[in-house]
Amino acid sequence: MTDVMIVIDDKAADIDDLHIVNGDFGVGESALQHQRHLLLSEKGDYKENATIGVGLFGYLIDDNSSAMLRAVVQEFSRDGMLVQRVYFDDSGKIKIDANY
Image (cartoon, rainbow, N blue to C red; front, top):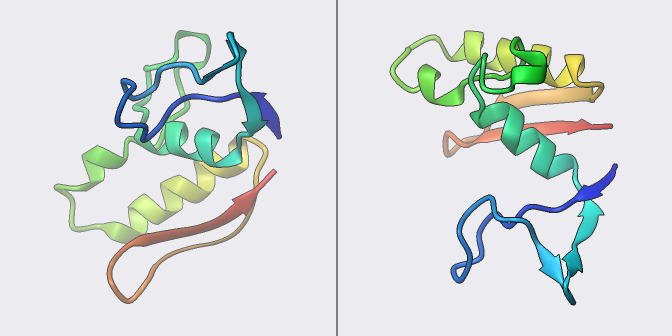
């Protein structure tokens, strides 16, 4: 999926600033950007669709990691992604195999 890109980890820019290339909006493959926004957003963050969002930070204090994984699969599927697998690797990092 191609979309307007957001700066995610540029040290010179504020996070979530629009990516500007030669004075115009930068566009590119946006699947990872959409996944990031779904993971970090809470329900109610988007006025147009108040029921979307995983709310990943809310799961940090919860010991129920399987509920978090289910929420990720549910939200990504609802957004139109084909979710192959969502799991924790050996180091405890969440791994997501999902794309549009």
